[in-house]
Image 1: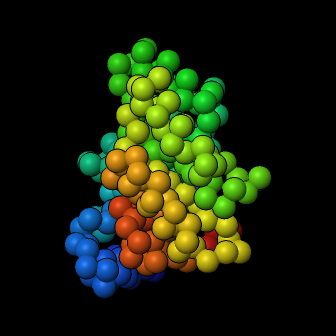
Image 2: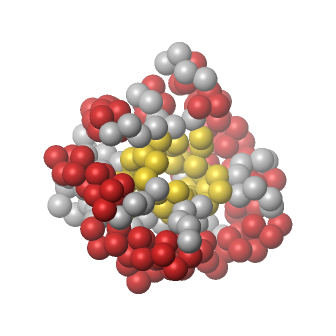
Length: 222
C-alpha cells in the first residue's frame, strides 16, 4: 500500500503537469489536494514523506483524530475541509483547518462571522456551488451565487477566495467546471477547487487552481 500510494502520487502529479501544459498553463498554478478521508495516519505518512503537503478531509471529527499528530511531525501542512460543515462544528473546524471549501448557506456564513469575532481570524474560505442543482447535494444554486457571494463579502465580511463544486456523477463534468469558472470570473474570484480522481485533467484544462484527488492516490476505500 505505501509504495503503491507514493507511485500513484507521482502519476497524478505528472498527469496534472501534462494537463496544465496542454492548456498553456504553468503546472505550479494547480495545487493537488490529496483527499485522505477514511485513511489513517499510517497510510498518510508515506505520502507526506514523498513531499505532499496539501490534504483534504470530509469530517471534522475524523481529521481531529489524526492531523494534530501529523502536523507535529511534518512542517508546512495545509488542511482543507471538503465535506459539509455543521454550524455546531465551526469552532473546531476553524481551529483545525487552513481552508474551508464548503461554505454553502446563510446559517454557516453567520456562524463563521461570529467565530471570526471571537478568534480575530478565519481559515481561507470557498463557497460551494451546486452546479447540477441536485436536491441531495449541498451548495448554493448557480442562480443564487452572486447574491450569496455579495452577502458573504459585504454583510458578513468573510474572506471568500473562490469557489468549489462537485459535478453530478452521471453527467459530463466539463460544463460544470466551465460554469464554476464563469461565476468565479464574474465575481472577481481567483480560486477554483474542482476535479476529482476521475476528471481532474479536464478540470485543470478549464482553469482549476486546486484538484481534489483521493482514490487515484490512496486507492479505493474499504
